Length: 116
Length: 117
Image (tube, rainbow over all chains, first blue to last red):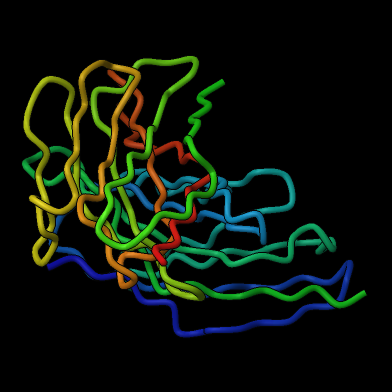
C-alpha cells in the first residue's frame, strides 16, 4: 500500500525567512507524481507545486521549491522569503501513474505559522 | 482556468433528512471526480471516485447506500447524504481531474460544511 508521511504536525517561521517541510512516501511504483497542496483557513485546497518522479530536476515555483530524493523517497518543500499569506496547512500527496488506482494519497499535514 | 465550484458552501439539516451537494467543473471537462471528507485539523479522507457515466468506486468503510454519488455529465457530480445523522457532520470536498491530462492533478472545490442537528 502506498503511504505518505509528514512528521512535522506544526512548524513556525519568521517572516522573510526560509522553512522546509518534510515528506516521505512509500511506493513500489517507478513512475508517479508528487504534489504539495496548501489549505489556508478558507479551506480551499491550492496546488503549490508538482514533481514528476521520472524527472531528476527539482521543481520550482517562484518562492517554492522541492528537494526530491527518489532513492530515499523523500519530497520536502522549501518556502523562501516566507510571507504572512503562506500561513496554512500544507499537505504532501502522491499519485500512482496509470493502472486501476487513480487517486491521491495525502499525508497528515503540517500546520505552518508565519510570525511577523 | 480549472475552477471547481461546490454548492452549497454550508448546509444545516435535521437528522433523518437527505442533503445533496453539487460539484461542478466550470471551465473544463472532468472525466473523474473525487469526494473527500475532512474532519477538523485532519487530512482529507477519500470517500469515492466518480467517473462520468459509470458507478462510483467507494473506499473501504464508506457506505455506498448512505453516500450516493452521481456523475451524470463531464462537468457535474453530486453527493447525496441520505438519512443524515449528527455523525455525518463534516467538511466535504470534491475535486476534479482534467480529462486527457497526464499529470493527474486534481482541482479542488471550496468545500461544503454539513451540520446535522
